[in-house]
Structure formats: structure tokens, C-alpha cells
Length: 207
Image (cartoon, rainbow, N blue to C red; front, top):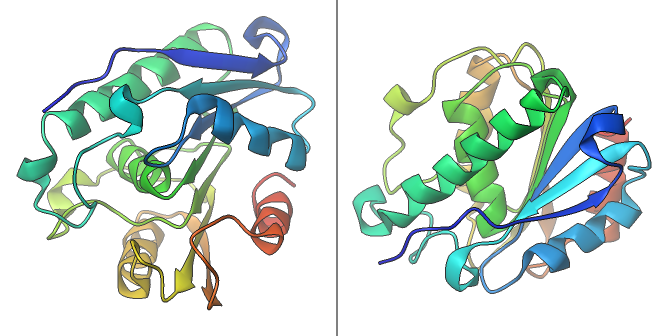
């Protein structure tokens, strides 16, 4: 099993000069540089961009729907990297309500898990093909009030990694925590980010 060093790739406006920050979380087998390529499609000219790099290009070893214990200590380590990064961004003068999260696949699952365990008003959350983590959902992990933070969750139907049912469950939990959740299921879409999803993210989250 493995843990993560805090390796952050940055781009965009320097944090000291930025109005907002966007944290990008890559999927399994991908890299921080890969996911940062999304930024040019999302109209983020005024933002500081941050993309952590996972050890072994994977945030946790097994499926996000495996028992949580099987994905430890990697999962807790990934969550702590995120927590530390968010603290760094707020110390640089960007408040939580101007911090945005964008994740794909494994990174989308980690994104939803982190924000739900640390719920408050954020700028917005985009989970391209993701859901909350665990074989069983442990509701005790999720506390706080999103204060109507806009959240977009997408998946394909069928998707080889993220079942529609888990997206629906995740949406319900976040709504109970006062998030303004939009979810969209794309029939027959391969495991990728489609142009329609990028347009939804721009319309619903980065408006």
C-alpha cells in the first residue's frame, strides 16, 4: 500500500493575484498535467490553478466501491493532501467560497468525498463521472452545510467504473447537506469527459 507526497502542479494566475482557485484531481493512470489541460475549456482566466499528483498515478488502489479499509492508507493520505492544499489556498488569501474543485473518475470520487467530509460554502464542485466512496456509504463521515454550493455530478450509462445508482445516492446525500446539485447521466457515453459535460460545468458551476 502507498501514501502520497504533496506534489502540486500550478498554473493560471498566481494565488496572490487571483480572484478564485480551482483544484483539479486526475483519474487513475493519469497525471496532474493531463487534468490541468481541462482549464482552457472552462474560462478560468482569473483563477489560480492547482493539480495534485497521486503516487503511482492512483489515489487509492481498488475500486471506489470496495470496502474503505481496502483502500487505506492511500485514501486517507489523499484526503489529507487535499485538506493541506485547501489550507494553503486560504492562507494565500482566497476564501473557501472562491475555491472550486474539478475531478474526473477516481479524482471525481475523491473530490466528492473530500468536500462532503468538509462541507461548507465553496465556489463550486464538478465531479465528471464520480460518486461518494465506499462499499457502504458511511453517513457519519458527512457533516456540515454546503450553503447552496453548486455541484455537478455526471456519469455514463452504463459506465465501467461508476454506476448510476451511486451517482443518485451521492446526489441525495449532498442535497440533504444543502448543496445545489445537478446530475446528468449520458446514455452510451464512453468513460471520458464529453463536450456537453464541459458546457454543463461552465453553465452550472463556472457561470
